[in-house]
Amino acid sequence: MPPRPLPQLEQINAEIFTLTYGSIVRQLIADFEDLDEVNKQLDQMGYNIGVRLVDEFLAKSKMGRCSSFREAAEVVGRQAFPMFLNVAANVTNWNTDGTECSLILADNPLADFVELPEEYKGELRYSGLLCGVIRGALEMVNMDVDARFVQDMLRGDEVYEIRLRLKEHRAEAFPFKDDD
Amino acid sequence: MYAGGPGAPLPAVGAAPAAAPPQQQQQQQVSSAAAPLPPLPPQPPAPSWQVSATADPAAAAPPPPAAVGPLQQSAPRQRRRCAEVCNDLLVAEAASLFTQRQYGPAAPAALEAVGFRVGRQLAERYSRDKARLGDTLEVIKFVCKDFWQAVFRKQVDNLKTNHRGIFVLQDHSFRWLLRLAPTAPLADGARAEAQARAAQPYLHLPCGIIRGALTHLGVNCTVEADARALPSCSFTIKITA
Image 1 (cartoon, each protein chain N blue to C red):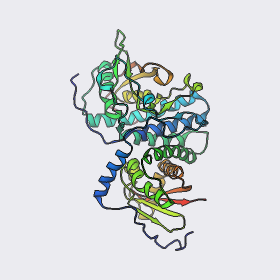
Image 2 (tube, rainbow over the protein chains, first blue to last red):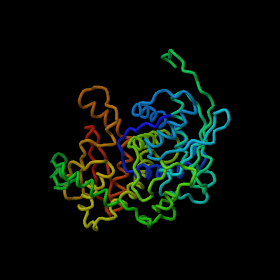
Image 3 (cartoon, rainbow over the protein chains, first blue to last red):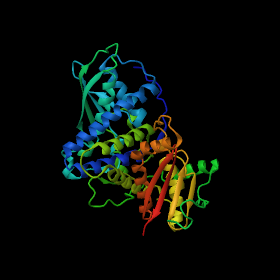
Image 4 (tube, chains in turn yellow, brown):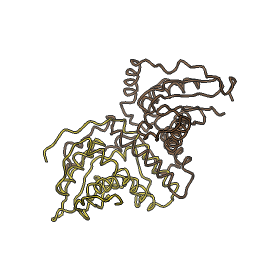
C-alpha cells in the first residue's frame, strides 16, 4: 500500500486524554471491585468509541475500500493509530491463511504515567479500550474480529502486542432493510 | 445568597481579557511552561490510589525495541499530542457508561470523582512553573486563563464575582459541548431547558475537573454548570470553608 500523507486532525495535549482514561479506569475498579467486569466495561467502551471513530477515520482519510483483512490491518496500524494517537503499530506475525496477525506498539499513550500495582498485573487489561476500538471500527467495515492484548508493557513485557483474529469477513448486503 | 439579590448582575472582574493577541501569547506561555517533563513525579501518588499515576518519563516511554520501525520512535521528553476526537469520544462514552451501569455511586458523583482526579493532576502539571498563587482571586484567574486554555483550548470569556465567595465563569463556546447535537426547534424557553437537560450528563466531568484544579490550588469550593444558552456555558463556583 502506498504511504499517503496523514490528514491533520485537531490536536490536544495527550495528557488530558491519558489522565481522563486513567481516572475512568480507577473509578471502574472502585465501583465494580471485579477486574473481569472492569475489563468488559473497558472493552465495551472501546467498542462504542470504535463504531463512531471509524466514521471520523473514513471521512478524514478518504481511504478507499480495503479488499482484504491484511490490507485493513495495515491501515489500522499504519494510518489509524498515527492519525489518532500519533503512534504507529507494526503489523506482523501473520498466520498462514492470513486471518490472524499482531499489532506491535512500542509506545502506548494510554499507559503514560501508569504503573500497575502488583495485585492488578495479572488480570487487569488496562489498555483494553484499544482492543474494543479496533473491534468496533472493523465491525463497521464488515470484518468481525477478536482483539486482545497478548503482551503488555505494563505487565512487564517488551512491547504492547494486540492479537487480531478475523472471525468473519461478511459480504456487504444490499439493499439494507429499514428495520435491520 | 449574595448581597445584590438574585436579579442583580454581578460586577465584572478584569480577569478575562477578550482581546485576541494575549490569547496567542498565553498559549505559548502555557505550552512552554510545561514543555520539559520533570525527572521527578510532580505529584506524590497517594498510597491508597489504586492505579498510581507518576510522571516518570522513563517509565512512560521506554526505548523501542529493534523490531519496530522508525515511525514509533517518539522522543520521550517531548510533549505528547493526540487527536481531539479521541478525548471527545472518551468523555462522551464515560458519561453514557456511568449513566447506564447498574451499581456503584450515582452517575453524577462518579463522573465528578473522575474529573476531580484529572483536574488535580492537570493543575499540578500546568501550575508547575508558575509563581506561587496568592489569594483566591489569583487562583481563579489562573484557572480562567492558563488552565482553561490548556484544557478547553480557549480562555474564559467572562468572570464575575460578588466578592463574597461566588464566582461565575462564562465561556461563550464551551469546547466540550460544541459537538452536542442541537435539539429540535421548540419554543424559546422549552428549548433552553431541553438543551440544558441534554447537556447535563456531559457537564459533571468538566465540573469535576474545575473543582479538582481549584481544590488542588487551595480553593475549596463547589462547581455547578449551566448550559441553558448553548454553546455558551457558565460555571458557578461557590467557595466553601
